[in-house]
Image (cartoon, rainbow, N blue to C red; front, side, top):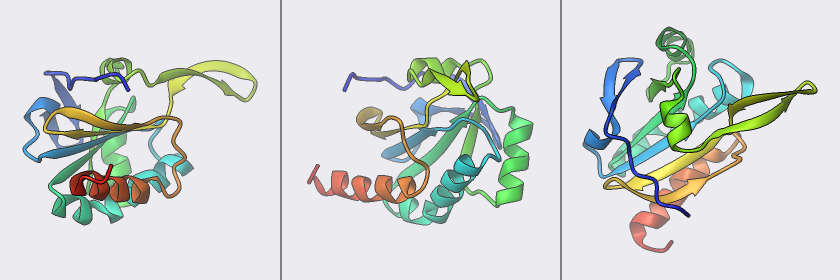
Length: 154
């Protein structure tokens, strides 16, 4: 696992701007997903929201990232009652930084899109990453792994 540093830049979110290097919690979960309001992405966002209180108890902030606009994120958040922060990465700065833009086959046509991926950071240091994630059950897996990491058993 290559070391990925958190970029020291401001990014637009559903509630303003955020700098990932200035997150107050000890632990940070950043997950990348292709598009707001699509079936898999909705499942994933709702699952992280349902578990958000448990992540918070573990001093962990969960942040989702996609290339959708802030407005699209706000609509998605309102429609699904999401409690997690969503970053709008229209310029693909974070996507490229985390190397999650991959060539995909969409209905027989090759396109570049976000490969569903998740990263766990502890005090700014990458401690676990997931690539080619399946949406269903992923939030629960991340929570279980986070508990194991905090217990020192991973």
